[in-house]
Amino acid sequence: MSTAVPSDALRAETVTITGHGGDEIEAYLARPLSPGPRGSVVVIHHMPGYDRETKEFVRRFAAAGFAALCPNLYHREAPGADPDDAAATVRAAGGVPDERLVGDVAGATTYLNGLDRANGRIGVIGHCSGGRHTFLAACSVQVHAAVDCYGAFIVEDPPEGLPKVMQPILHLAPRLSSPLLGLFGAEDRYPAPDAVKRLDEELTRLGKAHEFHSYDGAGHSFFSPDRPAYRPEAAVDGWARILAFFGEHLAG
Image (cartoon, rainbow, N blue to C red; front, side):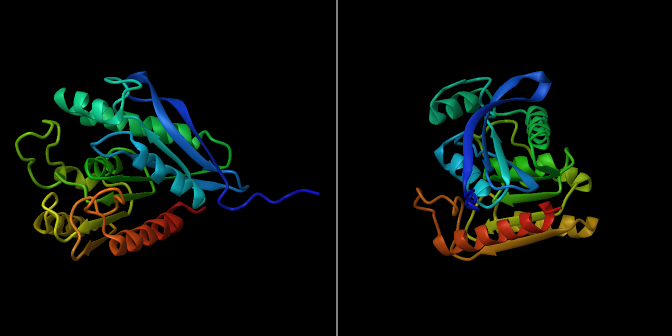
């Protein structure tokens, strides 16, 4: 007698994908074991790197029914290194160039679309610097849904000490290829509420589909349960919005 596969059963593993310029880079893949076609999500890790927290996000999407993949943006500079050491190495080198980020995300979408049961619909999500990279990717690669979780330096200039590549990219907004969900902390400094407002106004002016939510009492990193900045109510509501958003736009 056959046994049904639990709906949240998944397989997670490290794989190799082809990124920018044909480079072979490491990536973390998780996908459901349940049958049926499914949408896919590219998870862009934050500045602290390709770490445990990011991999937990990848597995959470798989448990929710999506194939999810996080490319290691720091693989070239620090293959196999501890996430903190890899992040420090890349930061000292000036950060991840925008062109390379776009190429790596494009490679991730190609890999996901090549998986069995992929329905061809791709979402992208990132937190912190990954939020900026999400906006960059959604303006440079064809995707079907994008989620920016408190991504800074889309609108504003970075302060001293951050990688030089973190320059404003608001001028790319006319090329936004998908609906955008933005989740922000009202107490955040980067991006501050004024920057979020400017982004909202520009997307409205351009007629780009978007939905922004700012949480009172929350600052940067409110999704991170291992940090003092964690805000359970904001994170729970945010996750519900993310999964509903991807469920709406990646089904098919």
